[in-house]
Image (cartoon, rainbow, N blue to C red; front, side, top):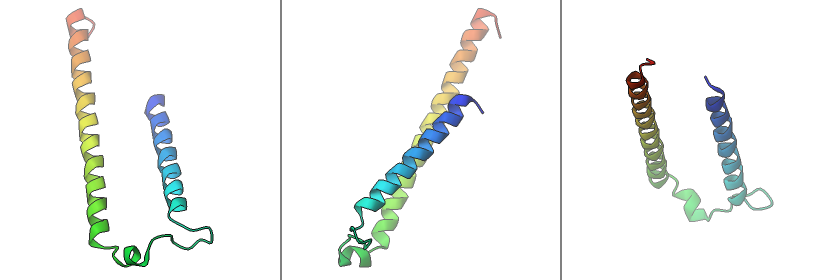
Length: 87
């Protein structure tokens, strides 16, 4: 693991934690009670499932694209080194 990978992991974790904390704070009243309307609390089911599935799909798609980009760049750098005779 490189220092850059570790740093990106730490930044990603911190971002996730801060986003979650801000979202939870925004969805609660000062007394600690949920700020969602009763209808919204009672309808947590299929719509929530669909939203989470969509978010997971976006995250997996982003991971796929980043992995493909990394492979393409590694292949391109290998070709450059090979052309220069250093590989």
